[in-house]
Length: 176
Image (cartoon, rainbow, N blue to C red):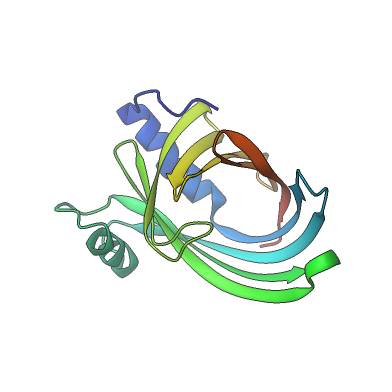
């Protein structure tokens, strides 16, 4: 997953279209594999993804959080209701905002922090978005792939100090 490539205006358009194509309600089934311990965590989530235009209040708030002088052209709001099985049974609800500007994907929070973070993104193909996020000594590499209009796959590899710690694999099915 090489996120160091320069993003072109065509890729910015691809990202906006990718966000539009992802809008809707999804059932996400995923597994997190902790590599050293061998622990496997299974999670089922209901996701609601909503496309955000430039004038969305959420994007203005995101822009302020990242102290940007210009507005963010588009983004998505993602809300989830997750049921964890296996070793850590629990229910978790939450939401996050993503915004796109240039070759940067802005988030109102990270995977493992409530603070705003950024990711670099690329498109190795029109329906596959690759993200690379770095903070607090960790690297999160994620690939999100649209498979027809009804399915998405995701894979996340989390590394610390150059060593892979966890892999998350997801299959998501559109339910509305």
